[in-house]
Amino acid sequence: MRREHIAVLTSGGDAPGMNAAIRAVVRTAIYRNLRVSGVFHGFQGLIDGAVEELGPRSVANIIQRGGTILQTARCEPFYRPEGRALAASTLARCGIDGLVVIGGDGSFRGATLLHEEHGVPVLGIPGTIDNDIYGTDVSIGFNTAINVALEVVDRLSDTAAGSNPPLNVALGVRPRLRAPAASHNRLFLVEVMGRESGNIALYVGVAGGAEAILIPEQSLGADEVTNLVIRAKERGKSSSIVVVAEGAYEGGALALQEAIRRRCGYEVRSSILGHMQRGGSPSTRDRVLASRLGYEAVRGLLEGRSGAMVGVDKRKAVFVPLTEVRAKNKEIDWQLVEVAQVLAI
Ligand code: F6P
Image (cartoon, rainbow, N blue to C red; front, side, top):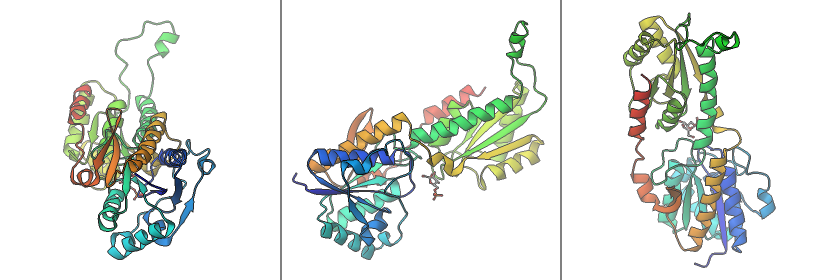
């Protein structure tokens, strides 16, 4: 398919690895003799005409950086027909005949409308730490976000455990098989991102050895969590970590903390990780994923693909129609939910 000039934008919540995807789009396009432009501030930049041509050096030294050099925004005017008409006219004026949209579900809604109403050739790249996009095994940013959150959970586990058994070894005493009961019964709640999706909580909870994991797809009430923690203590556990997805409990971890304290009097501490999970240098996996998807998006546009998302299915790039991506829900990994429950005994 003859294409001359494509553009790339990032939209919605930023995710670590978006810069690596921008770099891949820009360099692949130039390698394939296309002109390539960056659109600033997501769809708002299309409405405002904030478009700038990029070269291979424009994206030098960004693969390791979090955030997005193109900046991102949620754009209300774009969800009105007049906004999209303005966006389409900017593309036409700049002679842009292909658009790559890096973002999550809301961004793909905008991309789909632009494609359907104005015939703009559009391909989406999944970029969201929530990893809740149908049609791809994983989205850009998820791996970094879970690593950031896991580091915090590991640190809390250290302090939750209080004293560590290796002291016996240092003294030349045979280590006891069971650690001595700690004097406190501490419960740590860790709130991770995921207003509508429990993927981050699930992965971090399994990898961090959580006592319980609360996800929006299957939330637990305060009574259930309290019972789990009491039973854990009865089984000899001296401290517990519970991972709570942002959207899994009304009022979040702080409300849950208070509800548990009222029920059993345990000392409960909460850590709310918030937006720190979205920042920082992307992991190796996210950089590689973003590079692959950026490359494939340009290849897809050159093959005449449009109105689709490029994702990965068992390490292979796949193109899935945006209508399908938007219509279907990515199921949480229920097997992993069961694994988490079994391993918490
Ligand atoms: O990036 C996705 C996400 O992190 C969700 O998990 C969360 O609910 C939302 O973004 C919060 O984003 P903001 O507060 O920036 O709108």
